Amino acid sequence: MRVAIIGAGVLGVSTAFHLAKAGIEVVVADQAHAGRATAAGADIVSPWSSGRVDPGWRRIADAGARYYPILIQHLAEAGETETGYRRVGALSVAADAAELDGIEQAVRARVAMAPEGGAVMRLSPAEACALFPPLHPELGAVHVSGAARVDGRLLAAALWRAAEGCGVRFHVGKAEVLVHDGRVSGIRLESEIIEADCVVVTAGAWAPEVLTPLGIPLAVAPQRGQITHLHLEGVETGAWPVVLPRDSHYLLAFGGSRVVVGATRETGSGFDHRVTAAGQAEVLNQALAVAPGLGSATLVETRIGFRPVGPDLRPMLGRIATLQGLVIGNGLGPSGLTIGPYAGRLLAQVVLSEAPELDLAAYDPLRLTAGAERAAGARADAIR
Ligand SMILES: Cc1cc2nc3c(=O)[nH]c(=O)nc-3n(C[C@H](O)[C@H](O)[C@H](O)COP(=O)(O)OP(=O)(O)OC[C@H]3O[C@@H](n4cnc5c(N)ncnc54)[C@H](O)[C@@H]3O)c2cc1C
Image (cartoon, rainbow, N blue to C red; front, side, top):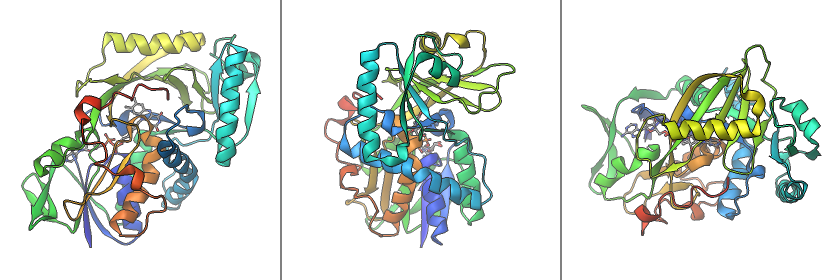
């Protein structure tokens, strides 16, 4: 069996990696769009800190976080250790004690259902500052020890190389799906035709361009995120925890004195690949309100990414009943680095006609088609 995959963001490369490990011949085409979400994400893996209540989202996000150490181990066995993944813990911060009580209660309840969240601890402002020194001195915190951060760009590159090592062929260019006799027959990549028994479309926010010619209305739209990288000269930041204020913004750190702050959630942005004055101001104002100690940092760059966002925040994963051989993976929205590696494993199981280890009924790609354009992204600004 030969499988063609369109799109090599985190979801496409993870699907390719898992298929290749199962001995399947895989070809991947990627257009390397400016603004692909995976390359902008410097990401947090901490579903237990999220206030989202949708059980469908929670099930797959918890499973995604649980799967990370296993994936990191698989990558290490393939010689890939540069992913930026590290369990640094997360601080949910607030100034008000009653608010922190509510956060603590909610986080403890979630971690009780998902023990990989680790230990939950209440920290005084001084204790929180000791872990993340630029933090505002009046902010207390709830600390979750199992939370991790990962660098989307590094992770995707590691998966790409590991997949190549298992025989996956990557092509750079725009691909379209070919159909013959009512089923997919492969992809066209520029002038080349690559035959395949199954085509997996993991084209992120650009997927409607690929699927509309096939008459498949996928309810996904781009949501721009602007995220800023800062440099704190001479400060070792590699072990700092993730910081989560009460809105959708966050701060996280990597080695090499790098602190990342963001991000905007601009529903209705289209594919407008610019750093805007308002976006930059929002990101910096929010970050400095929470961590005034970052005021002297050097602003290194602001990255732009287009999150693939559907009407709800649940992923879209599975086969399309009306077109044999077509599989879709999309809708990862603001949680794609948490969910994507695991969702790639699930998509590989779908392609192999194995029973996926998570029931995918709740993630039918076309469940939201009616009224999709109107609703796309509308709920994406909900609490993290
Ligand atoms: C600023 C920002 C911060 C984020 N923070 C977090 C976080 O803290 N935690 C978290 O879990 N997630 C986070 N995310 C979300 C996460 O990054 C995305 O959900 C995830 O990367 C989406 O992956 P994807 O593979 O579906 O899409 P993408 O990464 O967008 O990949 C799609 C790929 O398909 C290719 N493509 C499209 N059309 C074609 C075609 N016709 N032919 C060939 N190739 C094609 C594109 O070029 C692209 O490379 C963040 C995202 C952004 C933008």
